[in-house]
Image (cartoon, rainbow, N blue to C red; front, side):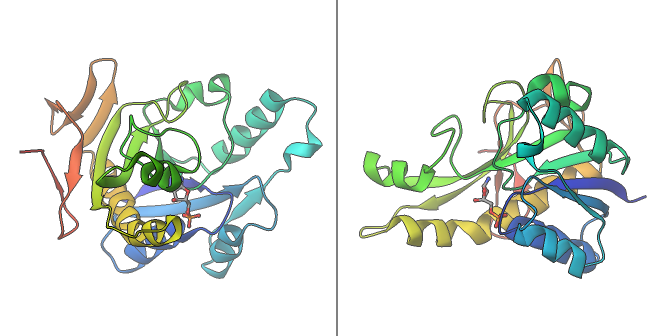
Length: 221
Ligand code: GRF
């Protein structure tokens, strides 16, 4: 049975593209039921349309209050009846009251090794701090910005002479593999999050899974 997923994206949509490719390749047991954006011109929407995926967008400027936009967004998304919502480059901070019904069924990909560097400009901040390692995290969305329980991470080394752009470019394909692997494990009902924390195959997950080179998720040694 394919799990119904909705994807929220504000921009380029390369993570969406990775999910579409994996699904088309028969490697991901999902049905992408819709793509939502807060930006009418988001390339992610064009990509969805090309792929015959339903799309919707709402413009925050049409709403007097942030919460009103967020509630309307989730009402729109709910019509697709997703079982899982994936934030893939959705660049708005959402009001927790709007996604409360989706807790445990909404995930986000963030380009840092959370809890380090929530928020913007992560690559720049990693370089400024002189970190030797960078990466990306997939976490369940909670009221805290980029602060929900982390399911899995991927690491990349920071190299001498790395630029912000170079580092971002090196990380991006690993992000793609990470989001695909996480959605895969959620769709296969191997990963769950509840009040007791994240469980993998029914066992508590002591720390985030790590993406291996072959694209599978491993428990940390
Ligand atoms: C990615 O780096 C993702 O981690 C972050 O926003 C970026 C989105 O890229 N949340 P794309 O739109 O999926 O290409």
